[in-house]
Amino acid sequence: MNDSFSNLGRYISIFDRLMRMYYDHGLSEFEIGWGQQFYVEYLYDHPGASPQEMATCIRVDKATLTKMIKKLTEVGYIRVVGDDRDRRVKHLYLTERAIPAAKQIKNIHAEFYNALSSGISPTELALTEQTLQHMVDNINQKVWHRMEEPHGFR
Image 1 (cartoon, one colour):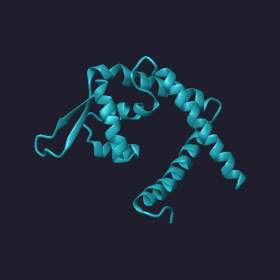
Image 2 (image 1 turned 180 degrees about the horizontal axis):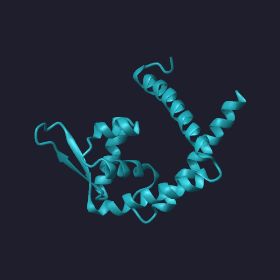
Image 3 (image 1 turned 90 degrees about the vertical axis):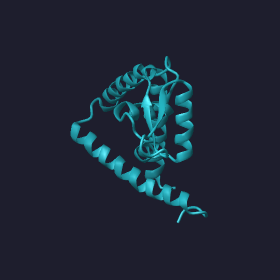
Image 4 (image 1 turned 180 degrees about the vertical axis):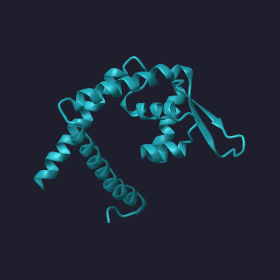
C-alpha cells in the first residue's frame, strides 16, 4: 500500500471521528447530531430549498436525504410545503423549534474552526481547503460514476 495514502486515509479517518464527537457533544441538548446538522444548517441558510437542491449541495443520495427529512420532520425541526405552481416540487423550512439548534451549529462551527486552525497561517489554510476540495471532487466523480455502473469501479 502507498504509505502516503495510508497516512492520508488515517488522518482523514481520525479527523472525521474527532469532528463527529465534537459536534455530537455540542448538539447533545438537541435531538440531532453530526449527521443531521448539515441539513439544519442548509435550511437555516436557504429557507424554502427543495430536496433536490440540498442533495446536490450536501452530495447525498435521494434515499439518505429522504430519511433525514423524515427524521427532522418527526422531531419537529422542519416542515415540508408544496409548491403553489408545481405539486411535484416541495420546499423545506426550519420550524421555530429548530432555530436554537441552527444557531448552536453556527457556534460550534466557529469554535471548531478556531481550534482546528490554531497555529496555521491563512495561506496554509486556504491551500489546504483548495486541496481538500480538489480531492473531494476527484472522489465524488468516481463514487457517483460507480453508483451509476452496475459492476463497480471503472
